[in-house]
Amino acid sequence: MTNKNNFFKLSSSGFTLIELLVVFSIIAILSGVGVYTFGNYNKSQVFQQGYDNFVQTLNVAKSRAMSQVDSCPAGESLNGYSVIILSSSSYSLNVVCSNPTLISSYTLPTGVNFLISSATILFPVVSGTAVIDGATEGSITITLTGLTKTKNVTVDSSGLIE
Image (cartoon, rainbow, N blue to C red; front, side, top):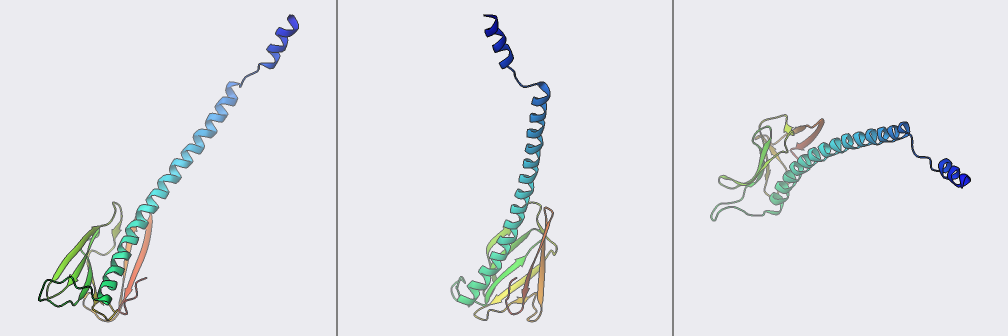
């Protein structure tokens, strides 16, 4: 009987307090790194979404102008489509008839801003070109910044959007 009791005492060892503390410390460090990485990834995706939406709006304006999608009121002729930067955080898509008419208004995600506060990019019907702030020559570089990121969108008078 004594041999059985000694056998169970020797083979029933557990974890020491130091071993448990080391394991929980490693888990805490890995969790902290994971939360930090997820936060940075989330900010990056929010910024990218704002950038992509703006570029898509420019491409929609150009595409509608080239395909002559007529959204003008009856009796008015279609001149083109424009994207207007209204402030450092908002822009709009407009159809340009006798009078420009708002199609959609957009706001950049919180923390993302344009470095310029106003600009107008007009895509005239059929031509595929761009008129930037009234000028038929040249280009404009629009910088989006925020959430530790910066990206540029360049539109030139030939209608190229990069």
